[in-house]
Length: 418
Figure 1 (cartoon, rainbow, N blue to C red):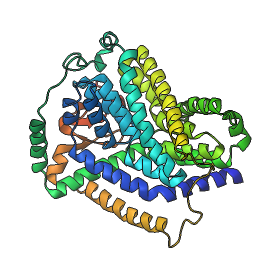
Figure 2 (figure 1 turned 180 degrees about the vertical axis):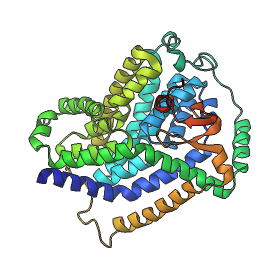
Figure 3 (figure 1 turned 135 degrees about the vertical axis):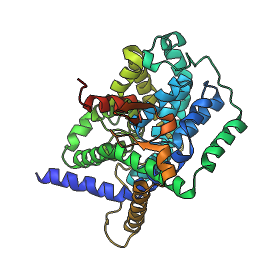
Figure 4 (figure 1 turned 90 degrees about the horizontal axis):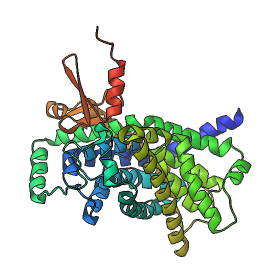
């Protein structure tokens, strides 16, 4: 029992040392999400030219870091006219190139991993852009389930031409109608919605990471991760990293504490990077792909994602090896002192005040903001009423959802009509 208690304590201190980074990151993400509409994204992602892929990556970086929300939004913008490859790139960027992920990586295992997140992310997006159109053909996409086919017909052949001035004017008109208080409340809504949606992943991530460090014997990890065989060790670790993400059921930022534990257990640098990238192939998400795109396409997507994640981890490790920046010690960089007059405690205090203020604005929105936004009654995520991925009229009230899965969960909970 002592080992289990020590594991939970270790998980708590990992959370304590990264609390301020999580709050700052989610608040910043909420601010950006309040300014960027889904309509804007889908209108300029109609092909997979380099400039479009760059836009998709940028939109992903500034969007929600939740893997479930990212998969739902990618599916939604594809249905509304975005290119399939651009939609998948957006999904990858929104879970692997986000600010809070980089900060937490830096705090837990070092700056090299934070930099590698963005270097490897760029490699991964480039590989995905090249390979995805070759693996999943236009003809195959035309046979997707009705729910996955673009609302305006198959859109990957159609380049949506949008005048940048037109949509800039549209965005300015939307924002001009919002007071400063409304904008703050909208940002707070996205921040709290993301935290509510990711609360389970974050808790599980820190708990599993703490237990993995204290309960699981080192001999197990040594047998699991081959070491001392040069390239073959790096290859095996990069392949097995995504598999661990698949079976751990943890995704998004919740992956980082477990990545820190795996690094401490001896997995290679590239294996850690591949594991972090693999939040998009956790088992629940694979089941979502199956529902969105059918069995055949979902299987292809999963295997392609796995390949791209592993190869990107290997390439990233190679780049950092050439630059001689691969850490030589498998340990965390968190300080040994937690409570006290130190930078972590002070930053956590500031973050706590920021969290309280954010929650206040979330619970007390002005009338104008509350009429534009709605809260998903299932997962708690905030959505714009005008471009919510799903909605449902029940007993005269319109409910809005972040994805079809939440809508179906809501419907299943309602009593059957006689």
